[in-house]
Length: 600
Image 1: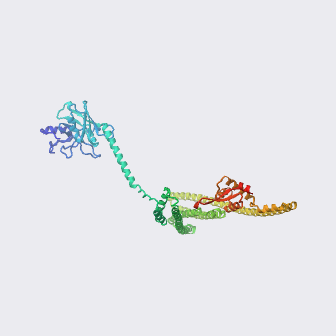
Image 2: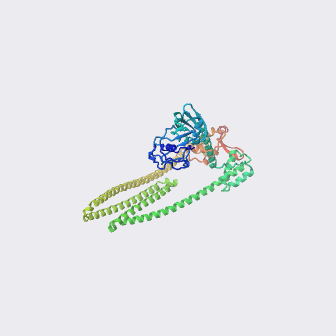
Image 3: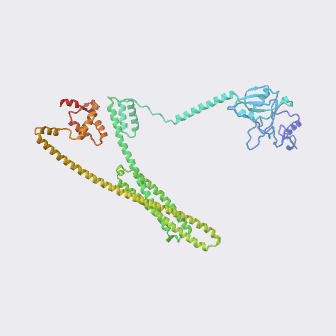
């Protein structure tokens, strides 16, 4: 890379013009008394051509140091660096996957061999496309080689030692857009996307749970094994899954129906075990809740005692004997204790509210107990408000005493302390005003609670009076029903006596028909009509449960036994038949009123 140095003075003159200390090929200075300030390019530190690492592209320079370019010597040309004070050459936006550069400013006499000699040290050159207008395109093997080639942008090139214009030029290196680069970049991106998809698929397969083992087909032997597993708690989930698969496959038929029924029965018996297990866990949870509630109530009692100690210490009898620092500490401790007590009290009240919400339906239906619980809650809140009111009054007394003490001390203190006393007085007055406002709010809440308590008591009295009125109306209605029944009986007796007197011959048939009639009331007549209409639209009959379910939509008080007795009495209107075979045998009722009419 070095030039032959036959004339040391010429070499020293060239390096002096570039502002570098003249150095020999062995690294010794040619001019010992050289002053770098006399050169043409000041500010550039001396450069030794024999420095290790000196090449076509120097190693990267740290960002906090200025970039210094060096002279580059080739076999047939020399590259001189640009002025470091000039701005860096402009470049276009880098295309994706760029491996091709545009090189302009070439000498007119430059050949492809010279271009290859200059740029092959940046990396492997794949192709050079040279134009007749002093520019070319160079394609490298890798993308990072383009960055090395861009380093040469701005260098002045000189062929040999000639100074002819056709043998010199200023290089301009920039990014170039080529189809081959874009195609290779897209292929690389697609390959990376495939690798990423493959990596994700492997990760998903790694985290995907293993597929369940295949379920064997049903046989008598497998059925007996599954029946045994259903009785074992540890193997129940596996066995129930196998049973479900068999049933969905359609393994149930007449031959295997009994075996499947026994397995289903075993599964049903497992429900009892589950219910018992749940009850045991619920019992443990209730015991733990009770223990926690007892412990919390004990803690609250102790907090109340501590707060009571603070309140008693805040009274005037004991408060006057404490110093200011002691009073301040006592008030801070009292506030902290009250806050912690209120937090624990809210927690305990929340537990009690949850227990009240879990009350049974019977407790919810009883309004008197609900009123009592609400009344007790309001009483508790009123007591808490009273205690808070008393504590606020004690604090007001303490603040007043402190104000009086401050007034006494203010008269004795010097004028220098007047400003501080006035500030303390203002602060205390503001505190007093805040406490008074808070006291008024508490009193208003106390009055509201009392009004709510009175309303609850009035509601309770109204409910009791309504209950008494309802009981009296019920008793009067029962007495009127009894009197009406007696009057009906007397009327029937008188009518029968008149009928006997008018026609003695017709008396016997009427009495027989009344006594032998299967329908005894108007309600039963209505039931017979509704059942006849229902069975008339069901020509193949219906079971007694089906009939009763239809009747209970009309009247929920109708029972199955009453309907069945009524239909058995009317044998000419309703007929009972058996349908089905074996286990599917079923009793059905049919309407036969038209046939019975002909028979009677």
